[in-house]
Length: 506
Ligand SMILES: Cc1ncc(COP(=O)(O)O)c(C=O)c1O
Image 1 (cartoon, rainbow, N blue to C red):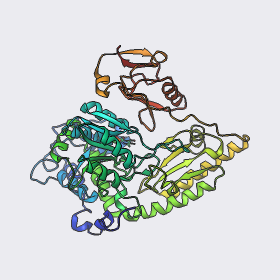
Image 2 (image 1 turned 180 degrees about the horizontal axis):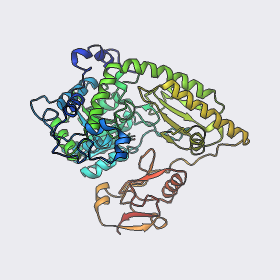
Image 3 (image 1 turned 180 degrees about the vertical axis):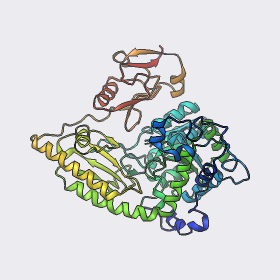
Image 4 (image 1 turned 135 degrees about the horizontal axis):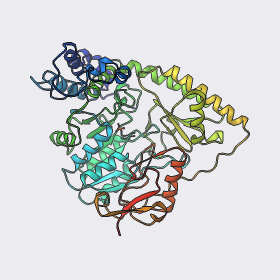
């Protein structure tokens, strides 16, 4: 939980007016531009609407098209400083307690790429949590960093990965010559929150910055009953997928650098962000970041209070359904679980005798319920901070009840003991070398024993089962194939059906 002595955003929200948190300077500038009906002798070619297909106008509305304005427009992001765009980023930095914040238009993925490119300015070697999101691995490939992978704690009962422990990080940092940084993920897809304070202390004791991929935790800064957020716990660079829980438009995200970061130069972050960014950032995405920043800074505490209460009731209702359980704060204290995010609903289906792969399609069929993630044992439903959490939860619980009734009506069933993900393969060469070096495409059955030249990441959750440079094993290839057969998709692979695999040439 948040240290009550540290200024959480709730306190900051009290002074929101003074800080201008109730303003949306960038969004306002976009609206003012659209309202004055300017001569649009610039891109995009739809010209604010007239050049758009009627189906597009109908789908997204005239106003969205009118606000779709290019970068470098005077009075919006160029002109007297601070420009509305600069002010919007400054307000975001204030709201999250950062030294500086960048708006991203290619998701938290762009944040992970930029973080790796930033660390590459410091040297060559980093410690990476092995189950990092695939975009972190892509960042390693882009930057040419030499990674030492460190395993997170795997829950022996649930078969899911929790977080990295400070002890494991310490050992990996000791083992890595010339290390210049470390990256960790918190919260996980399943809501487990890492001991970021402990991780930061360990990283700083080794004189290196800690990067935290807080893609799932953009809301944590705004309520004292939520786990402490990474910046407040001492992380130096934090990646935040603002679109996930806080609800800016899909693909928009933020990157925050701490007020007094260890080893991170904001100017270097700036050039790294620019390197992996379009020169035509979407004003709609950026405007949505400005708006949702205001929403959470000004109303977040109240909305989150409501959501936390509603989630507790939903969890209780799910647990009443025969055979279902939930992941919650009872996990806290297990290895790799320092705290738990109550806004996540992770449903343990083992007691029904069915797997998540079986239950999730039933929910779709019965109630048009579409989940964020489902696996053997656990299914994850995501709730946004501002939605009608209680009503949505009731809809989900009702569908769960009906699905479980159907399962019981079909007769008793034993939950098959499932195969946990196979151990990660040996890292035979660096990911960049493997990705860019001489390679060939071989049928999947002939890939066993070869070194992968690509990632294989069953999605969701998009955590690579295989990294470029790792030796392929029959168990891993079978596991990925099985995930595909169960309805998952494959990220990183050139053949998304895994009939062939790209391997390093011998
Ligand atoms: C831990 C983590 N990091 C990064 C990302 C990438 O986020 P985005 O989709 O915003 O690029 C995800 C996406 O699910 C994620 O789970």
